[in-house]
Length: 315
Length: 292
Image (cartoon, rainbow over all chains, first blue to last red; front, side):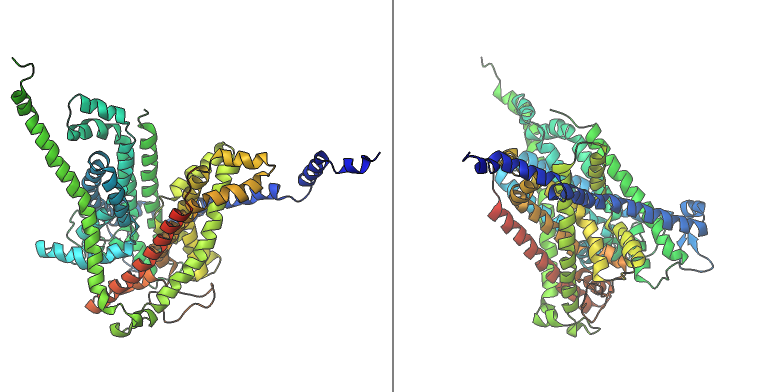
C-alpha cells in the first residue's frame, strides 16, 4: 500500500503525461513546421510575383503598342509623343554586343585559369589564388562601371582614336573581367571532380600535363565548363551598372562596337531615373523590356541546368 | 645494343615537352591577369580618391561643390538598409532552409521549391527592382523608402542565404541529432538546441556574404526610384533615403574630374565597409568552425 502514491509518479507515467500534453492543444511541434513552410513559400511567391508583375504590365503595354512592332521594328525611340517607335531589336543588339565581347574575354582567360589551378598549381598556391580571384566577383558592379569609364575607355581611346566616349567595347571587356572568376571557379570545380585514376592513367602512358589537360580533363569536365559559360552569359546579359555608366544611351541596330549603345538593362535605368509619369506608355515599356530580359536569362539558366544534368559524366 | 634509344625518345618528346612548358606559362599568365586587374583597380581607386578621403568626407552632406561634398547621408542610408535586410533575409532564409532540410518530404513540392530557388538566383537584379517597384513602392504605397528597398533587397539575396544555410544544416552529422532524440528531445528542440548552434558559422558566413551583396547592389534601387542626391537622413523606415552605390553612381555620371575623384573616395568607403563585413565572416568561420 505504501507504494500507491509513488506509482503516480513513476517515470513511465510522467512520460505518458508529457506525451498527452504534447499531442493535445497548442504545441510548438505542430506550429513550427507550418511557420517554416510559410517562409519557404516566400521564395515561391517571389517568383510568382515577378512573373505576374511582368506579364500584367507587359500586357498593358501591348494594348498600346502592337507586339509585332515591338518584335520587328528597327527603331527604339520611346520619348516622343508623336513619332514614338518601340522596336526592341536595337536594345537586344546592344545587349548581345556587350555580352559577346564579355564572353570573348572571359572564356579563354577563365578556362585557362581553371586549367592552371586544377592541373598545374600546387595545393598551396591554389589556396591563395582562388580566394583572391573570388574577390573580383564580389566587387560591386558600380565600381566596375567607374573602372570602365575612367580607366578602360581612355586607354582604348588612345589606341583606337575612332572610339566614342560611350561604346560597347569598354563595358564588354570589363563585364568579361567581372565574370572570369565565375567561369574559372565553376570550371575548376568540374575539372577537380575528374578522378585522379584517369589522370594517372594518362600520365602513365606518357602524356604531358598539357596533353592530359587538353585530351582527358577538358572533355571529361565539358558539361560543367559549358554550364559555367552559359551561367556567365546569363550574368552578362543581366548586368546593369557597367553598361549604364560606360555604354551610353543610344539604342542603335548595328554591329559596330565603337559607338554608343544602349542595352535592355540600361534602358530600364534611364527611364527609372527620369521623370516618366506612372501609367504612360514609356512607363509600361520598361516592363516589356524587363520581360524580354527575364526570358533571355531564364532560357540561359534552363540550358545550364539541362547541360549539367544531361551530359554529366558519372565516375 | 640499348633497348631504348634515348636520343630518339628525347627528339620525339621535345616538341611535346616544350608545348607543355609554353602552355603552362600561358595558363599562369591568364590566372595572373585577374589578379593584375584587381591590383590596377584598387590602385586607381585609392590614388584617385585619396585626396578627398578624410574625416570631412564622412561628416558632410552631398553638395554641388565637390570640395564640400561628403558621403554622410549615403553611408547612414546603407546602414539603415543593412538593418532591414539582415533580420528579414536571415529569418526567411534560415526558415526556408530548416524546412527544406529537416521537415520537407522528398516530393514534387519540395523539388519545385528547390528548383525555384536556384532559378531565382539567376534572375537579374534589375528585374527584382521591377518587382519591388510594382509591389512595394506602388501597390503597398511604401514609396522609395528604407522599408521598400530593404524588402526588395531581402528577396534578392534570399537564395544566397537559403543555399548557404542548407549546406550548413546538411553538414551537421546525423549522430548529433540521434543523440538528441535519444535523450528524449523533440524534433523542434533538437533543431533549436543542437542543429542550429552547430550550423551557425555556415549560416552567418552566408548571411554576411548576402549582406555584402545587398549593400553593393545599385540597379534595383535605381528602379525603385531612390534619389541620387539627398541632404537629410531618414528618421523611420518609411522615409525616403539613399545609399552609397547610388551616391557613387551620381558622382560617376558627372563629367567633371572632381566628381570622378569623389566617386573614387566613395568607392573606398564602400570597399572598406565590404572588407569589414568579410573580415567578420572569416573571423566567425575560424572561431566557430568545428569538424565532426
